[in-house]
Image 1 (cartoon, rainbow over the protein chains, first blue to last red):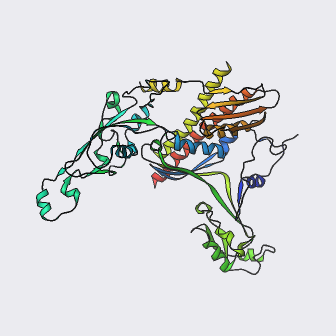
Image 2 (image 1 turned 30 degrees about the vertical axis):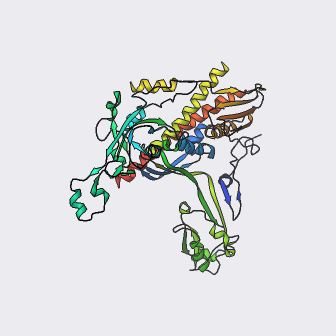
Image 3 (image 1 turned 90 degrees about the horizontal axis):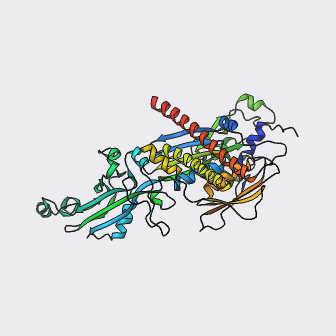
Length: 378
Length: 117
């Protein structure tokens, strides 16, 4: 059978997921061999290279937004899942409490420490390897080495300020002025260099430190102290959320709005108000449109009509579908293969690097499985 | 030194993470992947379905508390499930390369265009 010729309009229409008042239609992708009789749809790398597009919307170190166009949901979702759960990052995992007389219990303080996002020389963070914990099968694990463990210290003691008596006389009640170290912040964490780590993490700019220095960890009063040693290891988000390199990594599909019958005058204004600002615009019906028979604009020259301006800003609230006057005049949808990614990093790596890392991890997964398969079938 | 350590991690294979479940033949088999989930399962399922020599491909996670993923492949005559799986993995790796290059190029263009303003 000769390959069927499919028009571009038909191909575009297939990409639209219908969004109705209470239902969603055409959810699954259909570009699979055998789905449409006589059509090809076989995987073609050259074709993918030509059709796959990336568009950047926002490019800040730790906040990035971009579109992946022409990719299947299964792949886009794999990238998103890897971003959240499978990119290794450094976080505090073991806390050795030498002394803690603050009112924050050891385990509560340790948990707080674990959640602090850390940063440091990116090359060094990449150089670090994942620490393998001892298990029943492997009682040794990888062992604590300079290449898999970063040591940090927290040693603070609360004392009265030098001018405490003077302040007290003045009825000063701010504990941060009355006492030294009344508040323990993330900036009080101290990096201890070990072994070969000095090649990467030496100096103020390169050392391991909290992303945000002003995270409050505990409050103390004179006589109380905290003395802890922490071991930071590389782990993945699947194990604990503190290892997740992203605050959020999500995508949405590009919305579509098609106005199928004219929406005019006050109705047009009301229609525009159903959407976020900038999605729907108002334009005057031109003379030529008013002359065209069957267009629905006859005799409406100069009146305002609703036009779709920018669907990117739409939230697909479906508000317009609640009003009977717009019934049958508008069709909402989403483009099935246009993924608008939003990647917000916690600060250890830059957002764009994280996405590239997720791609390479998916590739590495495949390579590892391919090796396993070759081994198995040998 | 850095290159050496990175190579070590990629060569480090660990235990066998893939096996064929009983009752398979050349054109129909279920593979079990250890320590894998929807991330690889769904992506690989899609890539294998893109192969016209494949009659059916589907994946499932039999139990949520077991880190196992089962992948079912049935092919038409003239090929084997092993070839189909290998092609799926190869295609997915090719796709990753294209995504990386396209993403990097676009990002650099965007950075250059916004930086010039």
